Amino acid sequence: GIRIERSEVRNLQITGNDIEYNNDATHGIADDPTAEIYIDTTAPDATVCEVTIASNTIQATVSRGGANLRIVEDGAAAGRPPGLFAITGNVVGSQETNVHLTGCYGITLTGNNIYSAGRYNLHLDNCRQMIVSSNQFRRHTPEFGTGVLIENCRDSVLSACHVLDEETAGQESGVPLLNLRRCEGLTVTGCQLVAPGVTCLVVEDCRDTLVSSCSLFGQDADKAAGKPALRWAGSGSGNQLVACRIRPAIGDNDIAATANVQQLGNAAG
Image (cartoon, rainbow, N blue to C red):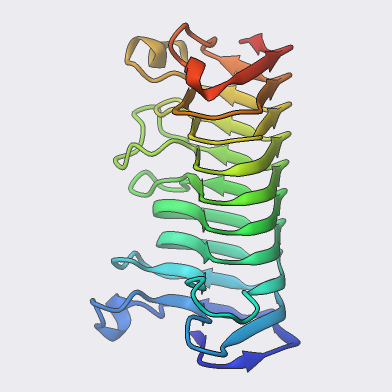
């Protein structure tokens, strides 16, 4: 694997590689979260920017707390957070979390095939100005899961992504295909979420968030099982749900009044 920590790095290109199995199963380091590419800028004066990660195959087996690609900044340091990254055209799969980005500012994640997560295909936490576009997320095999979690983030865009749960029974983790938590200024547009067995989209305690032109396709049977296609919960303000196709249709209790969501031009089915 590739690990960067306690460093100041600029103009780094990681391209055209097969990077695999830098995990607990290979190295027996159960108490240390692993990753095939691990960039850690939590140390004083550590900073990593101007990075391209492109055209790689990045794979492993699931290990506790593991990721295929992890970039972490705790926000305590005064230096520049990880940013000016282009992550594109990679095949990434088979870990607890495939891509885990924390404390990042100004990263594009585009055109990747990200599959087979123990819990999440993508987890963004405390990030800003993130552009996540034209990625494919899926389970690939029944024993794995799929899903995207974006929490404590602001001023970011998720567009033209496809998230698919192939299994009608749902996934063991029970996580929705897309979960937005405590975010501000997000735009989710042009995405297709197909989830026969779990909720497609869950939004919790978000402000100024726009979900538009998305297809949220569950099954009618999910409604009877208490699994709506959409659940918008908690408190919020300035939110909009616009021009989306939603199956099953939005129910009376699926969008909380306290979330303050304006609904315009949505269609059932």
